Each structure stands twice: as C-alpha cells, then as structure tokens.
Image (cartoon, rainbow, N blue to C red; front, side):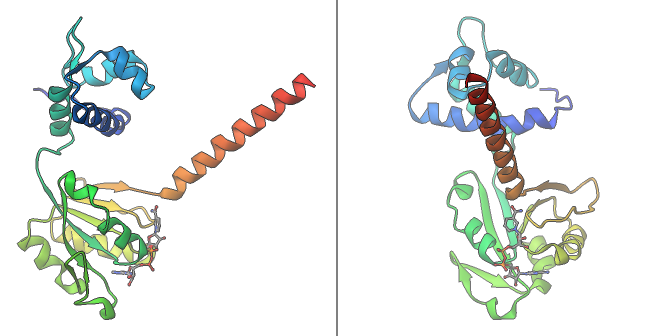
Length: 220
Ligand code: NAI
C-alpha cells in the first residue's frame, strides 16, 4: 500500500483505535460499524472514516469494519508487528516504574538493558536485568540490536547521553528528560511530559468550574 505523509494528529489517534479494537477482539466481536465504534470511542463516525481512509479505508459500506483485520493492519502501521528492543537510561523512580510495567512487553517492547551513572547501582538487577555503567552503552546497543532508548534522567545530563546514543546509531529515543534533544533527522524522538497532561487537566477543570459558576450567577 502506498504511504502518504500522515499528520501527527492522525498518528496520535491510532493507538486509541488499536486499544479499542483489541478490547473488541478479546470480547469476540468480529465486525463493527463506524457508528458503533464512534459511540464506543466518543469520536464522530466521520472522523474515524477520515482517519482510516489515510491508510486505505478498511471499511465496507453496509458491513462496517472487520475487527481482527483492522486490528492487525493498525498494528502494522504502528510498527507493532515486530519486536522492539529497548534500553533504559536512569534507573531511578521513573525508570523503575517503566521497567516494572508488564504491558510494554505484551506490545512487543522488550527491555534488554539498563544503564545508570551511579556506580552503587551497577550489578544490581531490576526484573532480572542488570544495571550497567554508561561506558558500556555503545557496545551493548550494537550487540543487542537495540532500536529504542528510554531516557529517564535529569535534563542536565540528557543532551550528552543523546549524543552518545546518536553516535551508536540508535533509531529512536523516548525522552522523559525535560529538555529538547537536538538529534539528526534519522533519529525519532518522542517527548513525554506527564506534567503537561496534568496542566491540561487543570485548565479544563478550572474552565468547567468557571463556566458552572457563571451559569449559577446567571440563574440567580
Ligand atoms: P531519580 O533521581 O529517582 O532517578 C534518576 C536516575 O538517573 C538516578 O539513578 C541517577 O543516578 C541517574 N542519572 C542521573 N543523571 C544521569 C546521567 N547523566 N546518566 C545516567 N544516569 C543518570 O529521578 P526520577 O524521579 O526517576 O526522575 C528522573 C528524571 O525524569 C527527573 O529529572 C525528572 O525531572 C524527570 N521526570 C520526567 C517526567 C516526565 O513526565 N517527563 C515525570 C517524572 C520525572
């Protein structure tokens, strides 16, 4: 299938389709109309059709979507049809929380190595994976086919670590450090800032309360 440039907004919605379809599939649902999917996901049916049309549609008039087929196709689009090997850098609170989350492995994201600059941690294990010194990163990445590095370190060390990762041809960085990384085009970076999500929640909550108070005043 020919791939056009797809907007990041569409890509951002695919994991949610994938999750919902996975649940339907686990419930034994074989097919679903775009209206039903729309009701479940609280997204308009036309949005679903538009999003999926970027990849060739998948739906049939009068039939809807074949759940299994769509699930598998979206998995392929998201690159979930193969395993990804990960290293994590920064074995602190956040790093350990990510390492302890089982679902990443279920989705094919396999942690192979852990690195930290603190010598006291070297040789200790999290989930049977040894924590190694930073000097071993380059060889480890090459020897173990690592394609994704997860950065859970403070921002002051992150730029230098990213340079090391670029030098050993890492393909992608999942960046939790609060700093923008300057990497070549060939390296994909996904920044995650949980506090951004919390601030958005705070905004929406304040806005809702504000509107409610305005409504009450108007009703007085
Ligand atoms: P932590 O202090 O528990 O762990 C940090 C670990 O990184 C330590 O083991 C430390 O030895 C290691 N480390 C520090 N600098 C390093 C370097 N240059 N190279 C290799 N290892 C290094 O901290 P925590 O709570 O795990 O947070 C880690 C970082 O992630 C913090 O800087 C925090 O700002 C950030 N963070 C980001 C979030 C996000 O949503 N993006 C959420 C929570 C934390």
